[in-house]
Image 1 (tube, protein in one colour):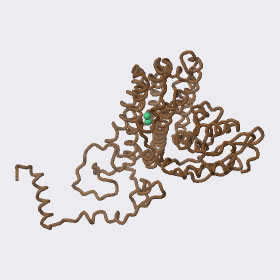
Image 2 (cartoon, each protein chain N blue to C red):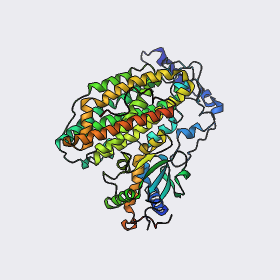
Image 3 (cartoon, each protein chain N blue to C red):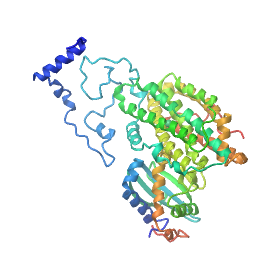
Image 4 (tube, rainbow over the protein chains, first blue to last red):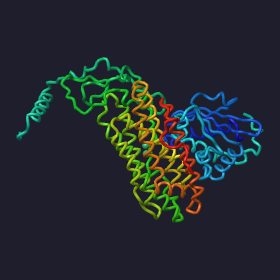
Length: 155
Length: 359
Ligand SMILES: [Fe+2]
Ligand SMILES: [Fe+2]
């Protein structure tokens, strides 16, 4: 059981990616630090996911956005949007046309991409297939684990 | 023996000496300081150019490429009688180099894809005629403009000194990428009941500017940063135009390739301007011309109308589409200016076109 959002959730995605070795080798190397920032009405939660070559190296919770590594690409948005994205992936096995990371962030809303400079932001574009398939790994996590309030999931 | 030239006869002589056991073997002991190299893969990505560059002096890229003018690989012993090919005139590292180029080459090789295999062609579905026609027009235009980014590196490749092989290798991957972009949009236009529509005379002005640019760095700034930067943002927004999972995947895969090309161009311009700040004015001037040509390319009838129809979801919703295209244009400008900032050049106050479409 891996609640969303939680370190366990991202750990599960990490393990799935690393177990799905041939698929991610076919997509190719990715070297990027992704920070997922989830905005709740009264607080914020951040998770850092590190991609290195063909692997997802680590996934951890950050105490705040300020703790993100230099060069990190930040994807941020309201909890309800993240939750809808994860539920959509769980329903379809992968994000449908309206729920890909890229579609949700195209107009800078409801998700928004940022980084210290444009070349770092461009990493989000450069590794899009890897990032999308990493999140599509949520399709194999039990749907019941997406919590309605997002509050109780301990990191 | 037949009647062969003295050159061929000399080769026969060599062969018969080898057969008689009269060996030379001096080549075995050439380049002694380069011997005993044991390059090792850093991790599971395998043995990369960066790994072999970490061995001995093989990774030392000279500021000025070898004067022998041959194709001899960097780091080998070049016999004095090696003839110059007489074609390498980009001999200065600053004219072609980018610090990320070896990494980008390996990434390009690792992230290659096939339009035949990796696009889910079976998921194409019949579309309303206005949308299919708009998609076919966008594909016609992309198929037209994409290979400029193959032709431009091809024009300069054989001028680049072989000591900068990392750049040559990367540009070769770019040419392969652009070949795929040309054909994937052609395939899409022909795959769903439509076909190729109209070529775009307005697009050709920008292509001409790129292909006729007076030197490599000027051409690179114009193409890698301005042209491909705009296309990168367009491909990202291509997901907004997508009618089926087919276009979504095409735009996503092309976007990844473009981001590498833009990353090279941005870091090349940075490397160049740090060493030739006196040439900043020249770069401004070519970018000014490029901005004007890009503006008319983006807004000529066949491109602007087709994109707005796709973005809005049909001819009846073109107003909504125009609003989205307006946002796309604003993003193209912002991202372009931000990439130039990374390269060390500020055009925010010198832009030759508006930052927003006057709609
Ligand atoms: Fe391209
Ligand atoms: Fe390109």
